[in-house]
Amino acid sequence: MYEKKIPLPLECGLMMTREVLGGKWKPNLLFAIVEGINRPSQLQRAIPGATKRVLNLQLRELEEFGVIAKKIYPQLPPRVEYSLTEVGQTLLPILLQMNTWGEQNRTLIETVIAERSKR
Image (cartoon, rainbow, N blue to C red; front, top):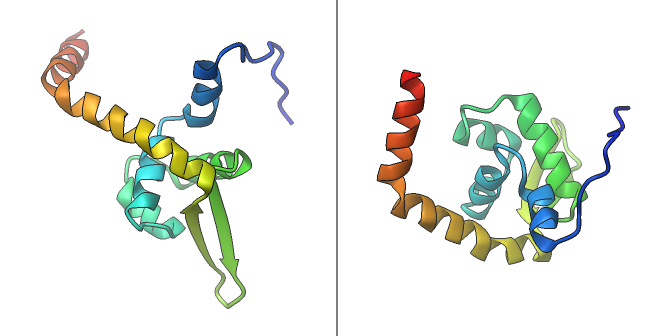
């Protein structure tokens, strides 16, 4: 298994939060779960830009941090559902604020992205 050679800098809360939420699709996954999209195939459809492998990896990481819970129903074929834990619920204000900031600054961000694509 891969082992990082440089230790993670966890001196402040911001670095801790980044470690949990860092990942291209983690905020999207959490929003989808809050909206009731809780099965892996539903999440895949809700986030079409992400591969199944990456979504599974990021779901596993969120589960390791105790942000989401995974429930496996004993049936054939097996059914899996994800839900937010109490810890996950505490992240909602942060995610909502990130969403609000992005919407408020949409024009600027879209302009910068368009300029980057011209380079």
